Image 1 (spheres, rainbow, N blue to C red):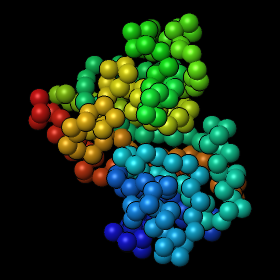
Image 2 (image 1 turned 90 degrees about the vertical axis):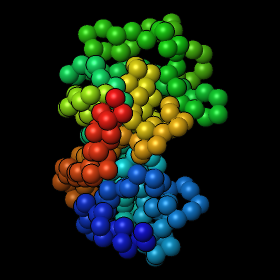
Image 3 (image 1 turned 90 degrees about the horizontal axis):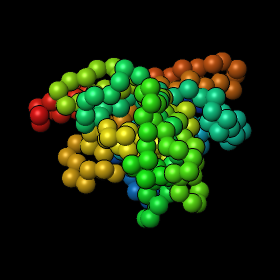
Length: 237
C-alpha cells in the first residue's frame, strides 16, 4: 500500500491543521526504517506530518497528526495533561471479567526494555472490581502510576470484547494491565510468542480540542479482521 492509497482509504478527519488516520495493524506511527512507518511513508511522498501521540505497531485505529508544526505542541500537551479521551476496543483470550473494572497498577521497565507491573504478580489485589497493589509491594526503581478502566461489551465462548479507557498513556499499558490480571489479549506477541493472528486491540475513538476551539470526537470502526478474532477464539475452544 502506498501513501496516497493509505491516506485516501483511511483518513477519518482532516482540516487545514489536522489529519486523523485509521492506522492498519502492523504499521508503526514513526521511528522505523522501512516502508511501514507512516511518517516516513508520508515524507517520501512529499507530505510532512507530526504525530501528537503513538499507538503500538500491533494496534490498529485512530492516530492524530498535526499538518503544521505550529499546532503540534498544543496537541501533544493535551495528551500529557490527560484531557484527551481515548477509547479502545480489546478482545481478550478469556472470559470472566466483570461488567466494569478499574486497573490501578504501576508500570516499570525491566530487562530488555520490557514493560511490566512494578510489583510481584502475587501482590495484585482485587477489591470491588478494582485491581491494585500495596505501596510496600512496589519494587525499587522507577514506577509509573497507571490507570485503565473498562466495560465488558460482549462475552463469547473463550473471548471477551471490551471498551477500554487508558486514563494514563504509558507504553503497552492496556496490553500489560490486562495480561497481569489474567486476561491477555488475543494474538498479543508480548505474551504469546506463537500468536497466529493480529493482536486484539483497536484504537476506536479520540476526543480532543482542535486548534479552532472545537471539541472533536473522531472514530474509526474496527474492520472485519478484528471482529473475526472473537469467532476465531470461540472455534479454538
